[in-house]
Length: 171
Image (cartoon, rainbow, N blue to C red; front, side, top):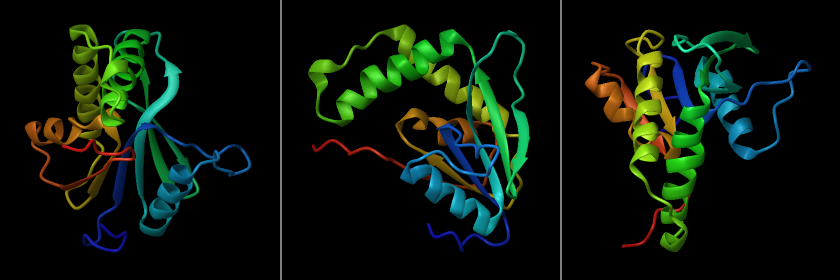
């Protein structure tokens, strides 16, 4: 997908973590943050993901909205349980080792898998009221593999792309 296709809609990026610029407008180091930020600035758009904060209120569902450099950021706080099961658990103790052909390091359990799917559902529920009909949604990496399916189940008809930042395991 090139940044220019897709009509007049915005680019909506969903990633595990959002790379917010600091108070001087500088981005955190790393290729992904710089590349995605440039694409968003060129087309206009929304970047949604984890805020980096652990939520303390059980009922907080809506992401916090923030604007910087012409980009809208939707920042979702996650509970410690969500982080432990989704991020530290299933994503990094199952998917990451398996995708790197290190099945010997994978530590599967049902609670981690449930947490992984729960957070993907949470991201889908949070994104539904934020996206527009003509937006192109671009999901980033192994943390969010089920997100496209979750969005479709909620009626999202937008074009959805997926980019995997780690190697695909050979057959």
